[in-house]
Image 1 (cartoon, rainbow, N blue to C red):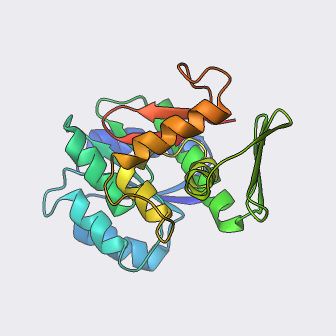
Image 2 (image 1 turned 60 degrees about the horizontal axis):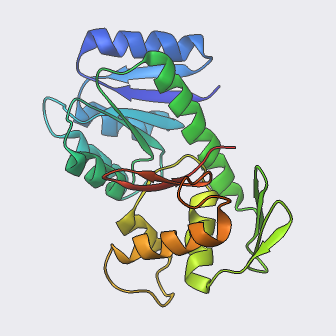
Length: 226
């Protein structure tokens, strides 16, 4: 059974999240502070962590930062904070998704399933990525949309492949720069916007209303779920 570690100090929310995840078929462990989160991660080796950023004895961002030193455990953040900077920092630290309180428990279950699915896809590392009518051959660096060949530069191809390998995952501009490390690219994050614009022009049926490569305002980009 897939195990989810819930790190949440507000017990009403923790119980609600636990009940919905258990009903969805997950085994659930609940802890209420950062130290217990780190200890449970090492001991129980969960498949995913749901992490509240507002913990009593240390910020949830510190927990994520520590875990990323020794684990690629998928993390879904919960936060009452509306500032975009918190979400960006969390994603930069390696969190896979986030929900802002108040949130729908059903939406959380859907996000957990999506992150686990993306994590498994990334682990498999398939040479051929197929999402809807987009096909990306990473070995030959070829891209087609509904059978139409799309000619991309090496940087554009690496950006597209990074996004499409985990459809639905939000990537910050900084993460996308890291993903194309070693490929000729300007050393500032806004350069990503220009590359995305070029990819959309070549890939999208209507670049002004993109179907595949979607903007997450204030954060970055994601590839649409199939």
